[in-house]
Each structure stands twice: as structure tokens, then as C-alpha cells.
Length: 563
Image (tube, rainbow, N blue to C red; front, side, top):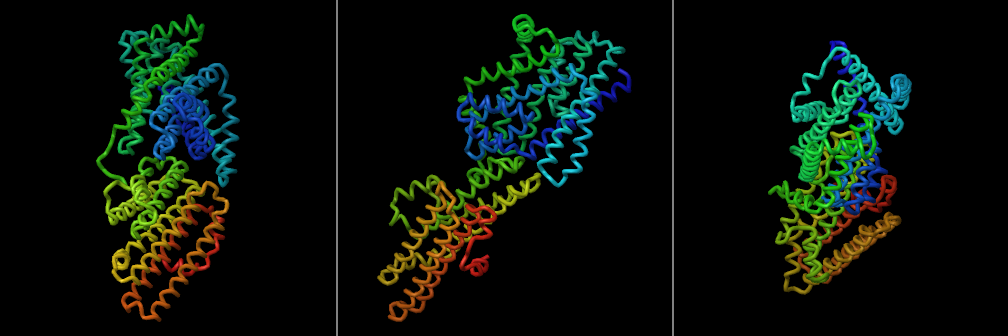
């Protein structure tokens, strides 16, 4: 191979990798919402999970994007680990579609002339549509497609030229494991098996290497993708490490299977299936090994899923329930997990507020025990629960900082900002009541009927508010949420005024001492502020941006003064 051929090969590889980057990144920016919905709907069992992973990866041409979606779904509790593994298996099968496209088009059709107008039109489109995200990403996708095949054409030309002055035969005496290692190392260095396979196809097409050697290098490339996933999982969340380990186990086993049965599989493809073209035999071998591996693992997904669930369990305790499983690399999917976490956060606040006012007297012991199991660890004190939600807020802020480092779209960013605002308001709501715990205990434990009855009034007020609040917050239909929150706000204001009036009446009758008067007003005011803060939290959580802006707040200035 001359120096010119070498640089042509390197330039072709660079163009191919750059094209792949644009293909993947443009799809990542779009984030394939339709595909996320498709995965959610069609991953209810192992078999449909495998088919879904295959289909989505074949369309998106990026198993990494699919794996990131899977991580987000596992973190949000939408997808079990075993079904997630099914998607990963399918993604490995779907990833071979790129090899089929290259083998069928790249070497059978003159792509050199076709890529020029594709690259030219797409490049101009990038300039014209730089302010329009959707069209811009479509142009990037098309540009990536053109660069990919231009790079392939360069590599094909360099290999054809190399064939004239390079004799590969002396190297064929080496053991097959050497070529397996070559495929592994090349893929580990360039971080994509697709490029390695294109190089091998180019060499095979130029008759530089025989079919058996090409197959072994491709097997090494399949194994090399495992290293990329493992490196990407280092220092990552536990779910990411589990998916990486599962993917690694699959690739190691399927590679070993293909390596040991290389001869029989090639004979099967040539003599029984009837494929004679070496290029097609190569990609058929790759697809068949992944397909057989997926079929083998299908029967052990439950056991493998259970094993992975027990892996990478840290002693560190997270305050968040879902968020520490999410990946900020997929901002839109992460925003959905964030929303689920905030939902739990607000329910935790409601529960703490009820515990402060000993609402087990009204709601019953079973209600409290059940909610405590769902929202907190057993045996936690009231103050410890408050510390947990403060820590949860901190973890959400840390995740938000990581999210800002990604290329997050404005819609997802605005959504997360509103959710963070809801968290701050909810935390303030429970802080308001935490600060009066001693006042509440004083009234609830008092032997004086007037003080104890005032406590019962406060208790009923919290119960009434929380019952109405939950009905709005947890309702399936959110269409009337704005109107319902406004009615709830009016109720809070009316109850506050009535309670103030009742306190003044008791003062006029001389039934409350000066200290008790101050305490009663303080408790009433904190309940009022807490309820209003929770309504603000619900506004930011339940309403869209325009609804939140238009939300009528009769005490707007007072609410703003809280913060």
C-alpha cells in the first residue's frame, strides 16, 4: 500500500466516522419521541422487547441512542431489567442493518456520483435552516448519510489500489485469534464496529483478505463494541453498569459461539441458504450470530435480569427514588424521569405535613403505615424524613447541573425549570410546618380544652386541604386542574380568614392567654403559607407554561413575598 493509498483510506475512514457522528447526533437531538413512545408501548414482555429493540435500532441506526432510552426507562421504573435486556439484544440485531446497507449499496452501486448532490444540498440546508431545529437536524442526517458513503467510496478505492501491490498471503499463517484481536483493537480505537466492518468489506471486496479472515475480524469488532459500552459505564449510574454488563455478556457469548462454529455457520449460509456473494455472506454471518445469540439468551433473560439487579448495589443511600437511575445524556427522557421524581417529592411533603399534625387520628394507622413504606424507609423520625427530602432536592439540583451540560432543547429545559420550581415550593411548604412542630405539640398535648380544640381545628384544616389537593394532583384527567387549583386557593383563603376571626372571638372572650394568642396566629399563618406554597407547586407541576402564566392568584403579591 502506497502512502497515497494509506491517506486515502484514512480520509475515507474519517469521513465515514464523521458521517456516522452526524447521523447519530442528529437523531439524538431529535430524540426520537415517536420511538420512545413505541418502546414504551411495545416492551411489555421479553419477545416484544427484542423485536422493538431490533426495529428502532434499524431505523435510528444507533444502538447507543436506544441503550440510552433503555437506561431512562429502567430508571423511571417503566421497564424491568429483563425486558431492558431484551431491547439490548434486539439493538444488537438491528445494528447489523447498517452492514446490510453498505454491502448491498456501497459495493453494488456507484455511490460516488450520488453523494455529491446529497452533501451539497444538505450543506446548504444547514446554513439556511440553522434557526429551525427540525429542518437543521434533517439536513445533518442527510449530510451524515452522504459523508458516510463518500468515506466508503474512498476506502473502496484505496483497497482496490492496495490490492495491486500488497500480498496478504504471508499473513494468513497466523492463528484466527490474531485476527479476532485485530478486529477488537480497531473497534476499540475508532469506537464503532460499523467502521471496522466497512474496512473489512472493502478489503474483502478487493480480494485482499479471504472470507474466513474477514469473518473473524468482524467477530472481533462485535467484541470491541463491548469495550466502548463498558468504558461509557465507568463512573456511571448502577443501571448503566448493569446494562453494560448485560450487553458485554451477550457479546462475549455470541462472539465465542460464532468463533467456535465459524466453519459450520459459513457452510450453512453458502450451501443451505444459498448465498454465494462473499460480502453478503459476511453480513449474513454477522446477523445470524446476533440472531442466534438473541434466541439463546431469550430463555435466560429472567435469570440474567435477576443477576444484574443484584450487581453494582452501592452502600450509598439515595434520597431520590427514580432520578439516580436516569441518564442526563438523553435530556428529553431524563425530563420524564424528573417529573416522576417530583411527583413522589410532593407526595412525600403531603405525608410529612400530615404526620406533623398527627393525622393518623383521622386517617387511621393503616394509612400511615402504608404510605410510610411507599415514601420513606421504615423507622425514620419526622426530622429524618425532612432531611431526606432536603437531600432529594440537592440530588435533583446536581442532576439539573449535569443536564445543562447536554444539548437540551428549550421545551425540555423549561419543563425541568418548572419542575424545580415545584420542588422549591413544596419544600417551603413542609418547612413552614416543620418550624411550628413544638407549637403544634404544645396545643395537641394541652390539658386545656380551648388549646386542644384549636389543635383539632388545625388538624381538620390540614386534612381537608390534603384530601382536596390529592384529588387534583393525582387525578387522571388534568383538563380542569387550573380551575380546581383556583377553587382550592379560594378555599384556603376563606378558611384562613375564618380561623383568624375565630381566634379574635376567643381573644375577646378572654379564653386565650397572650402567649397562646400569638402561638395560634403563628400556627394558622404557617398552615396558610404552606397550603399556598403547595398550590404553587401543583401549578408548576400540573399546568403547561401558558396555563401557569395565566393562573389567577388572588394573593399573588403575598405568594411572591414568601420567596
